Length: 474
View 1 (cartoon, helix red, strand yellow):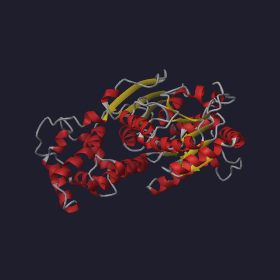
View 2 (cartoon, rainbow, N blue to C red):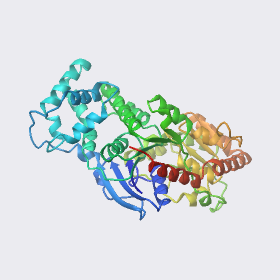
View 3 (spheres, rainbow, N blue to C red):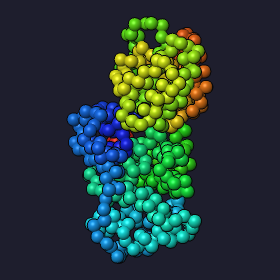
View 4 (cartoon, rainbow, N blue to C red):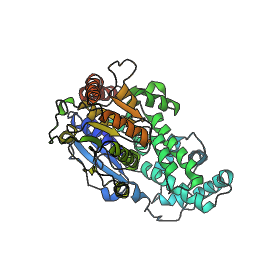
């Protein structure tokens, strides 16, 4: 079977999390061939992979969003020959909740133009924007509205017109632009499309846009609605929607996904890599706090550092090891280092990317301070290494640390509110002062992984999923 794995902003350019998940899945299915459809933010990533691609990856198609914004019009089009259905579908992208995606996709792929920029130069598109602006954004300068709509729609239109590799199954590891490509694969080749949603794509984009400085305030709502529409597109076209835990399933249903499409397949870890870990560093009496994490805003490293400052004041022997790549958001990394310097916090160690197996055995506790997550692999791996965790109340962290309803194993750590440095510090100090509690929680963590989150169960579930795809009539 040939599977087109569609990755947006992750594999093979970024390590950890979703990328590690993709790498594990492909490597454990040598019987299948994989095409990687990689959607990256910046073209300077082209060909620069953070992973050695497995031998069963037969093709990598790279598409970069920044290149789409550099496109130029090649001609002036006076008449785009847009029928009423296409006009209505186009208009719905800017002002309605429901979009006639099949009509829009068919029009965008069939219209004869030299460049997609010619669409934005056409009289029909200009007239549509004028109507929508007058009716819905009366007090907004048209110039602002035009450039906002252009920025919003350009990547989507460019992706719709992309050449899609032919495969037996299309599998996107997020909704959004990745889901759009999955839907196109199904629409063009009449093959099954599977969506695995680790976090809730629309919610994550909403959080980013609310904070974003590049979005003018009165257009934030339009951008947020646009990404919700893209998510509903993924749910509409997907034959099966895989989520990682129960709460995400409820949210997907609320957002418009048909309940019968959704199945839960939790992530899994290879227990053998982490069991029987021991401290290999010289025991100098330090209380070692580990965080396996990318240095990016969504992981909220600043709250982590601020909380550690409070911990350090109470426990001078504490050390914080922040283990993960620092080059994804260089400006944010520099801000984090400046925060450490400004507060004069000692023993914060940025290790960069490391082999977590070599480090985890030396940690006393693992922490995660994200403001959004799905089912974090870093927490699963720490639990497999018998390490108690302190995490924020995101994604499936409560299920991982406290267990599901049928799980009576006990607590494997402590969950605290998002961006609450005081509660986070209190939890870390509490565990730091009670070695017996750390050991007990570590044992519970390992048993929970052994029972519910093994790599073997994860791989078998996806093998069964791909096998089911052969039976679908698309």
